[in-house]
Image 1 (cartoon, rainbow, N blue to C red):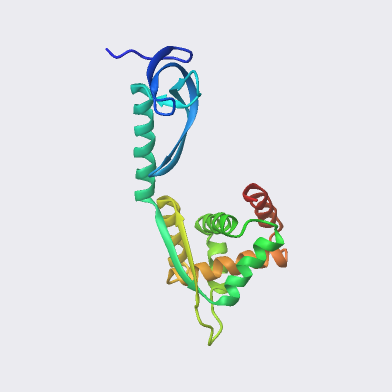
Image 2: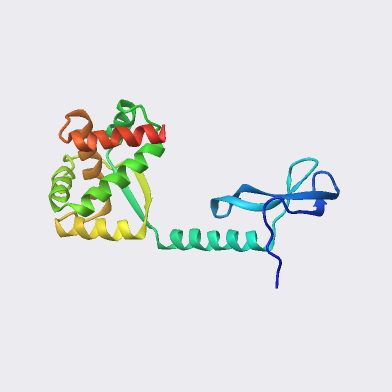
Length: 205
């Protein structure tokens, strides 16, 4: 049976920075991965007593990291992607919203659109509003691209609701979502949603 290590246990391992067999102490640290991009919090690792670098990962922590990787990849595979082309005036409205709420452009825009997708998936009335606002002016050219990744569950629910009320494609869906958000922010048509947007802007600024 493998030994289960705990915090403050000691050992030795070759430190890649010190380039010697170093004494180590096991401590909890956050581990960042690049593929998939992931941060696993409070992982027990062996730390070099001299340089404080991470030099070894025990089997129990490796099991936890591999489990986190499998979950992250599973979520990525089950996620949906919204791909849309919108007119430049709507794209500018998207930027005006972020400026008005003093948020970071891309980070906030993605969170906001996911929030509005969630609203649409829960409310046929809101979905009907999105359909009404999705109508584009004659002669407008869809010159700007909007790409958004969402969970598989939200993707399925939102598209089902949108199709039920007559929104026929993803570009129309995104047009309606942006127009609804613009109204909520600049005409105060929904003080409740405006308040939520302000909170989201604070969280992503």
